[in-house]
Amino acid sequence: MRFDLELPSQPATSHRVAVLLINLGTPDAPTPSAVRRYLAQFLSDPRVVEIPALAWQVILRLAILPLRGRASAKKYAAVWMPEGSPLRVYTEKQVEALRQLLNVNEYHVIVEYAMRYGTPSIPAMLNQLKLAGAERVLLMPMYPQYSSSTTATAFDDAFAALKRMRNQPEIRTVRHYADHRAYVRALAEQVRQYWAAHGRPNFSAGDKLVLSFHGVPKRTLDLGDPYHDQCQQTAALLMAELELTPVACRVTFQSRFGRAEWLQPYTAPTLNELGAAGVRRADVFCPGFTADCLETIEEIGLEVRDEFLHAGGKEFHRIPCLNASPAWIAALGEIVAQNLQGWPVYAASPLSAVM
Image 1 (tube, rainbow, N blue to C red):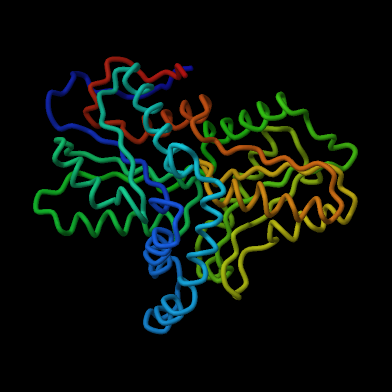
Image 2 (image 1 turned 120 degrees about the vertical axis):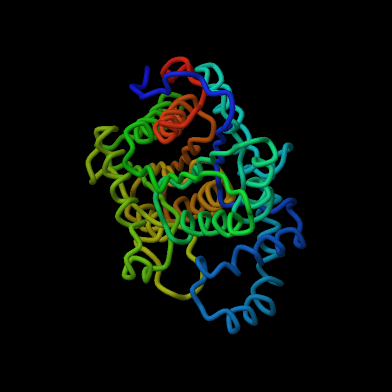
């Protein structure tokens, strides 16, 4: 597979180019203190919690962090890998695989990653890239669907860091890729490979594929955030790629926080309803998460699983996220290459998928 890209006529000898993958973040350790530090930063972001800061900080510091820190630490400990947090482990694998793909195709670019919350931070990595000689940086959020509470706040953090730089690098941003053909095909390939190894659901007998996206407050949709519509778009394209009808699938939203109404239907109650209705098997896949993390491994793989089985379901499957699968790395390379066009990436030939 090769990409039809416009390439510079001659290799450049300066103006290094960098690609910075950006994900949400993770605590540095599965301990209450580390989790509280992480949550304090995450939940203090006005893009994430749109409540007047003064009132919210009192609630956050006195009520939420002391209780949620301990509870979340136990959950992180349950999914922590020998190499560290799953999100960090899989992100690092994505970075290394993308480096190899670009290098094989003679794209001489720097590839690193940053986290919006926790370490390594976006400002720290932008400074590191400048020290490495990068004069052009592509910001590549690992959020396929645009949301103000994910994509926008990552760009906010990057631009705030740029305000403190006298000699700024040139910046490009990838806003979303919810409908990108390569991304959708990578999702479909992930599902197909799982079914090849674990058996395909019997959709004619009523089995279901549930596509669970991270939730956001419903008011964000009312205020014009395109996230909900882009999730529905991705789901529709994935169902078409898998040749499934809406009867065989459900689109849901998980990880609700607080008392306000969030995007519906909610994932856990939906699985409870399916189990109670006699659905024998439910497979849950999270297309909006490009790497497995607490929300996919623990929330879906344990909490939602229990909801379904306790309600009467017989067989539950959590399909892993894209992680560093060959199809996803090839798709990521294609998206990155398209957004690097016109920059001096030292490419001698069009990028081809070799993974």
